[in-house]
Length: 186
Image (cartoon, rainbow, N blue to C red):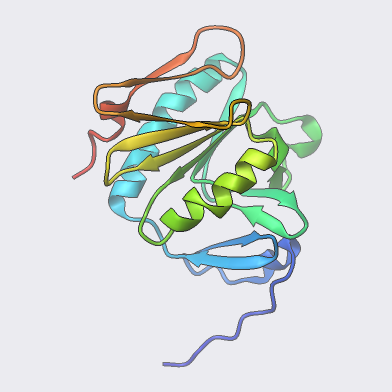
């Protein structure tokens, strides 16, 4: 089998030179991370979260996006959260190839064996220090959701029949029954 040569990746702009081969390419502080396509259970959980967040977001002037969507913290840091929520885009950023990280109200990463260490380590630290208001780590294997809030910098774990409440602005919160998020898994 022939090996492919990849261009040298040093900046977020260099990521555009990589092949569209089904892998996810992210750059954190200049280090390149490559992850394979997610599992079906990962996608099922992502779909459940997207559907529940989308209805809430539409009623509150927010936008929900699923990967792949590029989010930049700097010229050497660009990641792809599995799911994110932002305020409605400003006209000048509506067609941009990437979003500034500081615009994220919520970043969600769904763990898989190949991403768990990075999602709990580097990416958690990145999100919490780059202006993301809230970060969820969703663990399909354990069927739990960890919530990290920038203002309090601690985690809360939701599992089983617990109800997670998310309220990005004044008004009625979104209520998610954690067991419903994992109900579609095989």
